[in-house]
Length: 376
Ligand code: BGN
Image (cartoon, rainbow, N blue to C red; front, side):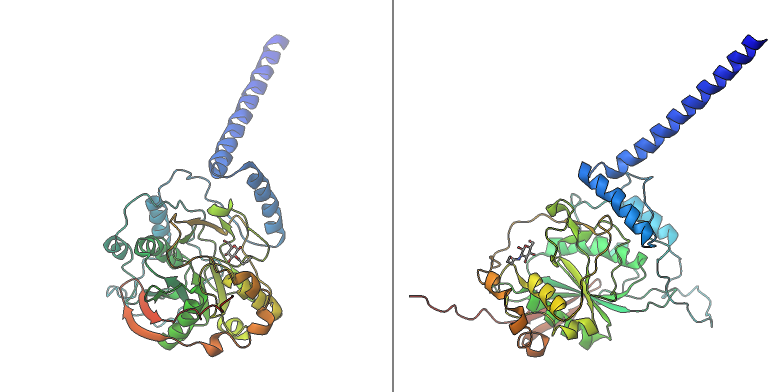
């Protein structure tokens, strides 16, 4: 009898151990698939950040269950989560109820996204995917009132293929984020040296002529967020969004980095006299903007490192955007130059302002760099 009882107890213990092993295995698999693309040290920073996040009262959730899901299936999930109300739909009965303010954390977000650039992209496809985007690349959430109106400004030249991917990924993300937005592509005409910051100043000015924006997000055309919890609106302080790019090993390259994607409210932008107009060629303009922000008593805020992840579309170095040899000197002088060089002194000529279904393109002449002083 006692032998029989002992046998049963042992059997139960074995079963419990087996069950524990199984649970352990499942958890390990989930963790493995979530982080398989990251390096080991990033796994640790993930746990640390997780702790900080919960301390700061942030709301986090992870899309752990679908490691191999395609982007299309993510989209499907998001669309299922989205309300099916459409502004242009004539089946919705007219309602007298005022629409509520949009929630702080939109409920339809899906978290981590699979971003790839292998499949061919066409404008027709992107257009079909985004029937609710209106002419000029504008969108207003149909079911809630967004607090801010956001202009997204992209400096541009000869990157048509990148633009298709950018629109393909960003329109659905912004829609899920419940952003009231417009997309502005600022194309530098001619083949003179590229001037990113000046194009951004043009974007700010032109977008404000088009609609009453409160918030401006400045994005490079080759940067795609890998997580839709990185919300594209403005914050109490100037925001840096692209803090963990794949090309920098998903880390901030240096503490004062402000490149790639950033956002300022109208008030913040005017406080720093906009961006510098005198950085011709690659590099330094983002550091100058960072200096302007700190010199004017503001500080840069950033998302959590797990959320601010970006994929950059690979490309050759652009022609006519060689590194600017003067940038080292210039960033030492922001304090003196920011008052006399900025949005207050911006000059340019718009040659074309055209609204396409998914974006507004503004083609501008912005001049050329001043002749370099001759050194004999
Ligand atoms: C920095 C560039 C930034 C650029 C980042 C990332 C300069 C100024 C002289 C130190 N700054 O070095 O403009 O965004 O690298 O590529 O070159």
